[in-house]
Length: 133
Image (tube, rainbow, N blue to C red; front, side, top):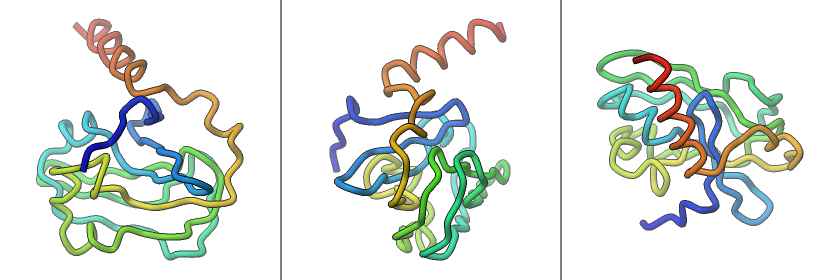
């Protein structure tokens, strides 16, 4: 599945959000996957659960580590990607397409302030890398 990357918003904690009508599709970025390696387990919340912006909504385990996943907006989980719970490797293969994690409704668009478009996010990562070196 091809995703138009110009509409992808990313957080500094490496989650992404893609607006799809009235809902926001949330997952982890390709950079996060690069850091984690092969994903072997995904834990997601129940549909109907409400979270505040920045709260942990799930856990992703890889061969290297377990990592918490943070919701970039306050809102209600209206759908979880059950496919990734049964086949977590989908996230490695297609994180922005089939590998999304949850869909959020009733969110405040103002919560997206502070996110970066994908190209800005890539630039941010390059800056971070330069600071480390």
